[in-house]
Length: 234
Image (cartoon, rainbow, N blue to C red; front, side, top):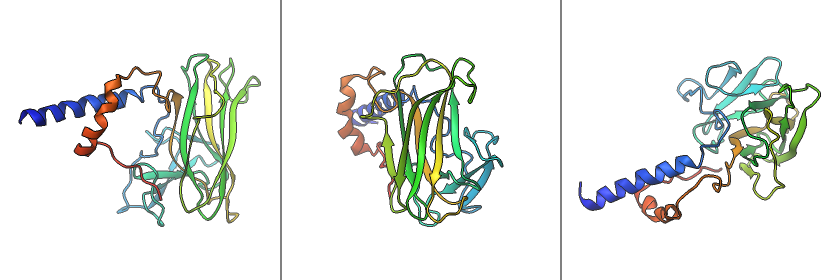
């Protein structure tokens, strides 16, 4: 390997290490719904129990079913990766994760992609502090954030906490819920695709993680090496 190639290789490894460090505070498990992985050879969509190993999410649906779709099934490209989820599996329900260990006064970030299935679908994002008992519905819950988002079936909408009022953790377990509100067509089991979800401290803003200024000079070299991929939209 000549010196030029060695330098490029070292630059790539260093940059990748720094990129990974930007996500050390991410909180979600399986935010892009890539696990369990299935292929279009066996299925274009699959229902999984929310107790399935590695799935990471829970649902409020009474049948405990979570619906995952594969990339480009029925012409819908995943926003990120090769799979995504539908909030309305068999029922109007919510997908959620409970996250513990985020210190009081931490500033919370989030991002996610949402898309309608048959037309304009609406979902709600809730971030709830579960109080001192760390139990949902225990009487001391505090809603830190709640907002609705509507998107049609022609493209993904991508949303972040950037520019919003600060969302400040209180130090208890947090429940982060994506809730189906309305879906075009009136079928309770159809609507509200979601992908690329994450939540934590500094997920959108890298400033809490020290990053050398020279990192930003790596872009041109990495582009030439094909390191940065393009996020898919449709």
